[in-house]
Image 1: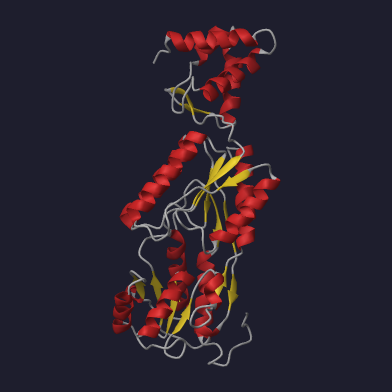
Image 2 (image 1 turned 30 degrees about the vertical axis):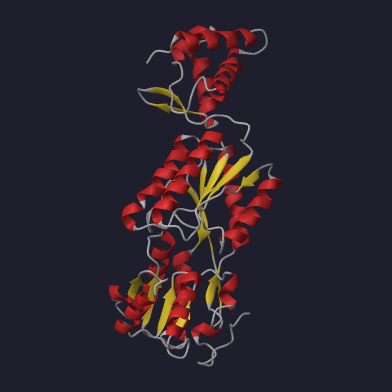
Length: 392
């Protein structure tokens, strides 16, 4: 690939303005930075070779190589063996802005997480922008289109980093999350994953991730049900695959296996929890004494449908959730659940992002906080004479 005369002329003109002040190393760095910022060198475009830059600046190859290495460490360039050096991201006036990709999930645990992120980001000199996004009631295609469009806007505006909670999608569409994260990465925009990975558990991506120890938390919750005397414990989750739920299912099954029970795959019920027909089918085929639900949202819908079907919680079947969202005490029967440390998650997410910006070469990090079990009426602890751990 050869760079045409307009690029050569523009580069030479800019060099002329630098020659009287700075070192050759600094001139090369400034030329490339300015070229990226002005659009002379676009994202994904190969910049001039080391030999071309050495000739144009009258510098030795070692000086050019050191300058490009510095820009690579700053995340602006990427080198590809045998192909050359390419623009990874562009500098921008918005480089003190962090973007969010939450696809309609601004409620639940993400409201307090994002509130703390915004406060902590301000103390670090950054702002957190919340753009319009599809609602959580949108269909899968609308969620995908809206998230991809917002991703493109972030790339075009050159935000400093993006916090991304991967979409909850059917298994055959989960690759969408990978494409979104990699598009940001190709643009040189650091990504910190919130709550869940772009791959299903137990796989791990190469991006930083902050959330909770889902498998261990689910073990705690299921052990609580076991200690209350429940032996047939089954799991209910929504449609769509998500790494957190896979880990929680594994934790639930761990407890049963530890007590000598071989779980039946049919004990994991996945379906449209908005539809009472799904719960009617579950209850027709199930002999469960207790249900562990993927999260409080699922638990609340399950409770409502069970009430319609004339099944009492916790008298006929116990229910537990996960997250301890605001309405966990407002549902038909106050919900036993696992409380996520949302403030700590938000603080850590910003910390990981700032550290990633300072050192793009850091290995991928995963920070998993422990949860706190909150015991309320839905698990039947009061009925079974165990209220020692009950909380609000």
